[in-house]
Image 1 (cartoon, rainbow, N blue to C red):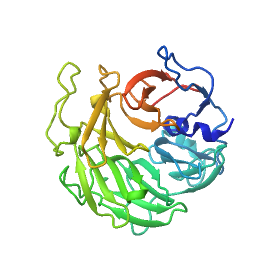
Image 2 (image 1 turned 30 degrees about the vertical axis):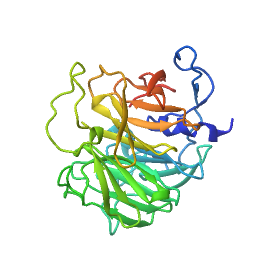
Image 3 (image 1 turned 90 degrees about the vertical axis):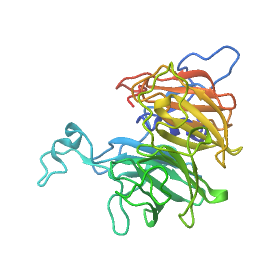
Length: 341
């Protein structure tokens, strides 16, 4: 099978540490809707070198060369993963050592490059969260640690290029110079615009010029001016709140719409690029816990929208234009093909 066909699937499932290819059956679709089907691929990725291990996945992306980029978190590896001692001085066991936080794979899962971590001239995030590679081969990444208020720009070889915002400087959802726990990001290369789901502390989508790294515009739910009022706990029986609780992901469709996953509100909202509200759809709206709308990806033909659900451990399949849920794949577990978000 041509792995290029399944990059949209990989864009979702690598966030769980598993990969699926098209084919096979996972879940039940609604009648009269021909939806993609997926099969777990146990060969992706190939074994890593240097006794490396991957921690929690904080983000992933597919670039214009069909290479798959993974941003993981080396620091919080569990003790049984940090591995009994290979990284100790002196080593106390053969395995294992945390891999560098940024990993680049080809379509067959072969590791092509690795880099990242603290360096001169920039503030590496304390908790890695969100990565995107634009059409000009710039790598953008962010983090959602307590003080993380920045996004970083690198070359694909890991050379630092620029930074927007500074750790510990967040001034809330009205701040145009800093972020507040950015969760994910995407780039409109044709218009030199970086879209950030700025959601762990702030409650907005913010747009930044990719060349000057200057603020351009921002908005909250329904296109409202973002604010930081306490919304209280999510109640599925109450009217939808007028602000984002945690915009956790943002994605741009080919026809120019901006999709935002508002995780704890169990919803997807769609906007024009200027922030004008278009429509919304709800995903398993009685879900509590962290919420059902965590991540977003499109099918290659853009007919379907895939929504990662970290509370129910599914990937929901929606008709993109109507936001109608037509199917889902996955269930919670630790075995091959299962999800543990």
